[in-house]
Length: 109
Ligand code: FES
Image (cartoon, rainbow, N blue to C red; front, side):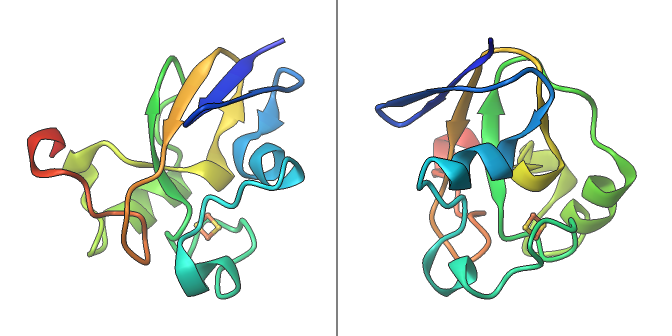
C-alpha cells in the first residue's frame, strides 16, 4: 500500500488512487486560500492543485502539460497537478504558497 508523506502527516492509500481525492478524504486540501473553494474539482484545468512530488510517478499527461505550460505555472519548475496523479508508489508531497501553489522557494526553482 503506497504511503503519502504530506508535511508531518503519513497517509496510506490503495494503489492507483487519485492523489487529490486521497488528500481531501483525509482533510488535506491541496489548494491554498480561496482556491479551496474556487477550483475545477479535479478536471485538470484550473492548476490550483499544483504540488511538488518527490517519488516515482507517471509522466505528465496531456491535461497537465496543457495547464502547467500556462503562467503562473511553467513546465520547467517540475510541479504536478495532484488531481492528475495516480499513486502507485510512496510519495512525498509538498505544497508551496500562492493561489496556484506555484511560489517555490528560490533555491528550488
Ligand atoms: S483541481 Fe483543478 S487542476 Fe487540479
